Image 1: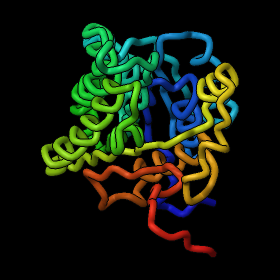
Image 2: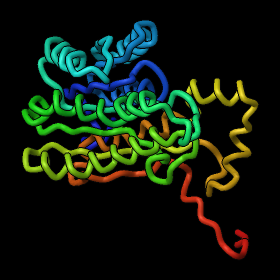
Image 3: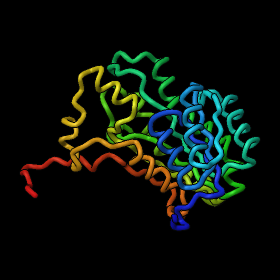
Length: 262
């Protein structure tokens, strides 16, 4: 039996980008903790699969096809959740991604705008649309950023800048919405073995585990490990935490002049 501060029974959550990857892992963990869950995305098949697995856990579920870059689509998505469940307590702004690595000097302005819209503006659209419902139940928002937003990553300048902006959006939103009882926090995953990541590693012959040699934990993360931090922020165990961004990336990469043995 779950401790009461981790029990999400009676809560309704919406996870954007909930058909695959960290979004899917988060949706399933929310359901395991007792929440009813809506998942959104642009592809019907993965959403349907996630809904099936949520329902197999004994929770209610809803799939909403939506493009979070479009304000009208976002409002329709939130309206569908309210029509199905009657309320919304938890918003997970997970939709995002970097489409292709490209040097900043060669970045097409239109591509820059698309990446910023997907990774930053979309979270504002969704949060703004959900806010009246979150206020009604003193709910919460959890934004999914990236370590790229903390340290930067070459080849994905727009993604890095947008994810950094998402962390500042988290701080400002927490200050403005805190008096209404709405908490806003942010999780910044590092190298995580999502389906898309594994596909990319295999395609390019990338040795992901070797690349983790500079991480204190010497390995990449699993999707559920990131989901655990997201769901913690969504629970009452984090009831006095807001405006924070927490890295889930295997520890800080700290150099030094000497090597310290165990």
